[in-house]
Amino acid sequence: MNMTWNLDCLYPSFESEKLSGDRKLLSQHIQDLKIWADGNLKRKDVSAVAIENFLRLYNDYKGVYICLLAYAELTLSADNNSEEAMNLVDDIENANSEITGVVVGFKRWVSICEHLDMLIASSPYLMEHQFYLNELLLQSRYELSEEVEVAIARMQSTGSKAWSRLYMEKISSTLADIVVEGESRQVTLAELKSMAYENNATLRKAAYEAEVEAYSRIADVSAACLNGISGEALTIYGMRGYKSSLEKVLASSRMDRETLSAMLVALKESLPSFHTYYQKKADLLGHSGNLPFYDIFAPVGAENGRITYSDAKDTIVASFATFSEELTCFAQKAFDQQWIDAEPRAGKGGYGLCIDIFPIGESRIMTQFTGNAMDISILAHELGHAYHSSCLANETMLNTDYPIPIAETASIFCETIVNQTLIASSNEKEALLILERSISDAGYYLVDFYARYLFELKLYERRASGPLPVQELNELMRACMAEAYGGSIDLDTIHPYMWMNKIGYFIAGNEFLNFPYSFGLLFSKGLYAEYLNRGKDFVARYHQFLSATSKHDIVDVAKTMDVDVHSIDFWRSALKLIEDDIAAFINVM
Image 1 (cartoon, helix red, strand yellow):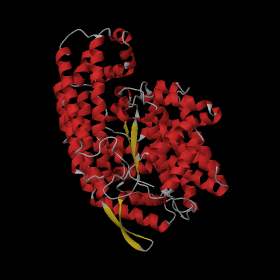
Image 2 (tube, one colour):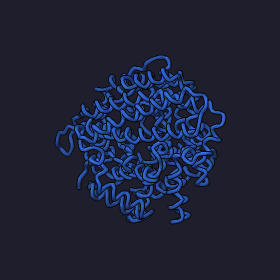
Image 3 (cartoon, helix red, strand yellow):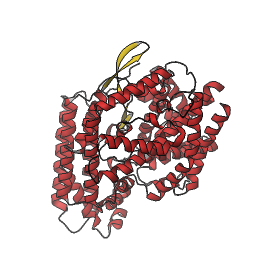
Image 4 (cartoon, one colour):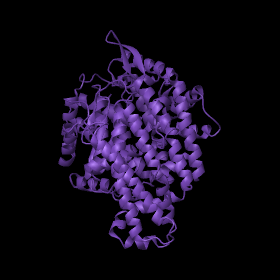
């Protein structure tokens, strides 16, 4: 079965006439937007027709821009040494910076309109983009002048984005030596990380130690990348008037601080349950003391050997069929039409990825499939992202953006479908192993991501006083891991370079890629419980919920599912489901 993706429906090659034509078309769209700006932004009167014209031009531009950038980024993700892809990314980002001033000017222009609501109500096309326009008004509070925003956009391509690419190249190209089944091998960091799920305890520990050694070789470069990215973020967000990087992320996530606070209060309350689980896991794995961190993801029993990619596909498609025909047909299409690059290889990003290509109604998914049970969950997770985007297929380009916490809800919901289906169809012993893996996954999204959240809070606090050297980053990460995991793990075994293991810290403009995953896990748990209560009646409502996520903030879209995200009790009820699983697991074992 083919384990690499096909990008021909985007462009057959970097030299293709189609790609060349789209680059010219992009330039024409940029020119059209500049002409619109020259003819409108200096006028004091704001008309519905003028706003419509801008939105149509910007939608057209986005349609071409997304295709070109997706092709370059997908190619670069699969092969970090592709100079053609690097050059195209630079060209597209430079082209995009040319209209930054136009977009900033448009935001300012509509923000001074005293009767914008009346104009929107007068036009069906503007009503379709009402949420987008209102978001622009909120964003305009934090916009600098057109000249400054253009300068920032241009400088970022050689600043934070260049640091991001350097980190990605180092992580994907770094190899480590390890002995596997008596044979000395050179493996990628992604392959080492996947060995954390192996049955072989000796291999898990050896892989962990090899990973630490490999990271130590690129720690100085990675620290420079992290300091460059975080330092730029502090400077730019401060200039724009944000109180902190977290405030900026909450705004872009369409999430208020009250929601985050409620979730974190409930999460912190639940940590002792996870600590009990990790202590039980230490006992089951034969450790006399606390659980070594290299065994945090270890299976507690022998699983049924390696899983083939074909078997993983069949498992996911069959599991999705228990939820809806639409979801299972979607997954089958993604496999059949080669939307997925799952082949493990050097030079390829060692992370799960889904890039949605709305102009062609498709997505592309990247994983490193090594045959572990965890690989099924990763595939299901990324397919969940792609399915979510398919629910927005009828939207314009400007109406396809949805907040990351809700994105993670859709992906983890699909993981849950697969896990629950496997438990239901397995014998008691197999079901227990799957239940433990589900609890382990929850611990990853909640306990581990809480540590990441604490680290990033303190990183930005300390970065304001200057760059952090490797040793300080190591110590900070250790302290945050210890706070989240408590006394349940052997603190001496905490990975000193865990901050390098978290790709989210190195994605420019996407700070705090941690609490959205915790939100996604808990919100999806609540939704899945509702599905169990309502059965098939829930399916259509869930589709409607996903279809509404690009035009609502989190509080309002949650209300469509009768959820109050400001309520600590909601988060407690979601966590109670996991706590009950932990109790059941401990009682049986």
